[in-house]
Image 1: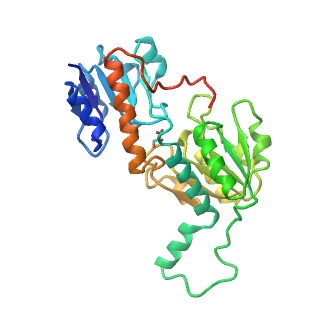
Image 2 (image 1 turned 30 degrees about the horizontal axis):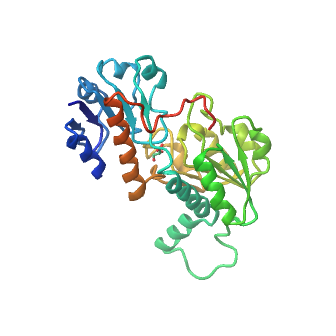
Length: 312
Ligand code: DGY
């Protein structure tokens, strides 16, 4: 019998397997993530941790869990976890790749289309009584077909977005770690960000990168807020250099309602819902539980988190 800490309620059958296999499961039951003190108390004595991207798993937290044998993140991104600190203690880290690729790519494309065709603005106008007749020159958006989409981060989700873009007759440029980002951005009508957040990618999309985009470009981010310099995004929206930005992810999350970014024009924001389909979240639970079970059995994890130095 091992002790497993799950840091949020997950209403999926996969979790039942932990108890069914005889393990003692503690679930942090609140709507909000456990605060640090609660997490430190709860993790003491745990053999396995199934955590969300809202938990910072660093050396200080691991010091409270001397017998921890596995960290299973309920996410594909692992920027909330100090991988080096885990490795130093011999604790394997797992994530949930592949099963959320399609859902996240769908959302990226939904944001791209919504920003291009000004859906949120049009909907607001109707609700506010500001739609009086068919208008020849209002709510004019950007053509998606024939436009150039630059995909930053040539991994699985980026590829899935590229497939969707091909179906919309877009020209796609993929930018990986070794490619010239600014040269590609110079051709961008749309930019979609799909790179993990690492020290090397923090603020990769900064003021200079935005300036390199074609005037009137549209930015979509479903990766991590920290990959984009939000102050620079707000400035580019205000100057009109960016026609729009559509963000599923922000830094910090949640973004305080008085954050100046929210006052920028032509900004569409949604609350980190890239993987938020029932199917994706159920499968993420399956993968995370499989990682926990393997880790506490001392077996290799079926879904180990990639080293941050691997290609994005
Ligand atoms: C992930 O898995 O990293 C996503 O951001 C969660 O939706």
